[in-house]
Amino acid sequence: MSPVSPVSLQSTRRLATLCVVGFGLVIAVPPAIADDEDRFARPGAVGAAFVYAGDDYDDLDAQSGGTDDGYGGTFWMTYRFNQWVASQVRGDYIKGFEVSFGGDDVDTQYGQGTLGARLFPLAPFTESIDDRVEPFVDLTGGIGHVDRNLGGRADKKQYGFVARFAAGADVWLTASIGIELSAFYNLGTGRLFDYSYFGGTAGVTYRF
Image 1 (cartoon, rainbow, N blue to C red):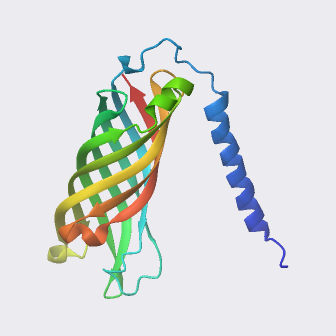
Image 2: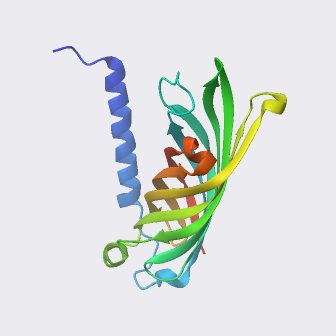
């Protein structure tokens, strides 16, 4: 059996430390939400997060040898109607995708605006156990825009309908302030089909 490399051990230790810190935030932070507080007294929420995105773009680049990484941001607003459903408006911006054309890496920027719903499938359980951790599922759709920098008049701008599917959880540190983590898949249609991508977000949210 080959020995475990120092790099692998170091990565494992860092991951373990991150998991312990995250678990500590969820469990050890004193609940600032009173037991008798109506959680719907604050139906509105806004948030912003860092986004990591990736795709291999095989349909666009026959030479693609792996995942193309993109980074950006997302912001959203929600309004909660009841324990199950909230409306959602969201904006996303991703930069850094590189697709090879003619041997050159082409910088690709991606932006979109979507609206739809945020669903809370475990609402009865989170209400009865602990209001601090609240899982959700996002279903939104809207218009996406891709800008490929090919140089001068060769630049390409494309638009199309997009759908966004996400699952994650809010961890409420106080009655109003929380940390939001999620994983998502962004599906483009029509001219944007080749630019579908997956990723994850980490950010903060404020409930009012």
